[in-house]
Image (cartoon, rainbow, N blue to C red; front, side, top):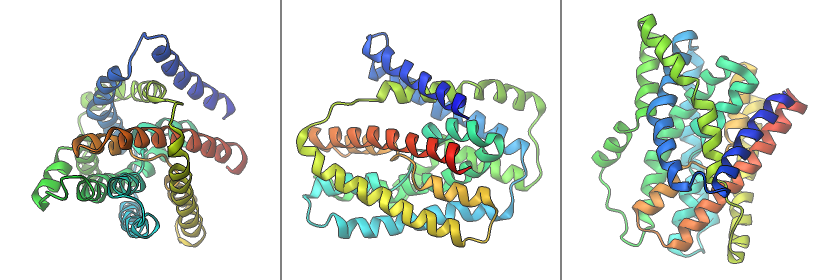
Length: 303
């Protein structure tokens, strides 16, 4: 397992070095990100759901994530009630949702293989609804222009999420015992092989260790809130849920994953200030580093 993590760290470091040497730039990450979310990740989902049997209990995973997202949003209102409007919107967007497809999949595959990907894929279904529903609404509400959303706009946002639509279609096919033609699966398997290295390179490209001093106090408060709440709910559900160990591992680890990458995209879309977008980017990078350490400890000292 240490060797697998070493390879992961090397690829992330390679992405960071390529950026520092100006061989790649952060704007190149936008193209890589589109390739991952629109091509390699959907291909990986098709392959994963085609080769495993989804247990009925797995349907509960996205429900738990959605309920947790609602609870987090409510508690976030209380914890950050005294901060200024735009900063509150930033924290609430960051609090809701997790970086599953980009961050978790490569590490989960290294630890548990395809079986682990099945569980985390179902976890990501719930994350998609939280990110494009709760986080999107909160980010819009606390923007300078205020809430300008209608339910149909949210549904359109969800419908345009290729990973989410792939999850739903693949789940329906799995439950209906319908298998895609072997040719499609073989092609998808070949394409999905690029998902792990591309995801790790992208993490390295987006890593940034620069941050402004005035961010320290609000960042510490946010990180304490996010990981404290994640540990509390994660361990509680791990101990008391009457399901298999992989199901409970998914909940525990899932709630300690980095913030969703979409928070930065939403901040730009809602015309947040430069200082807010920098804060969101900085927190995103820090949570990636924290979550890597958590997964490393989990894989080497708990499993």
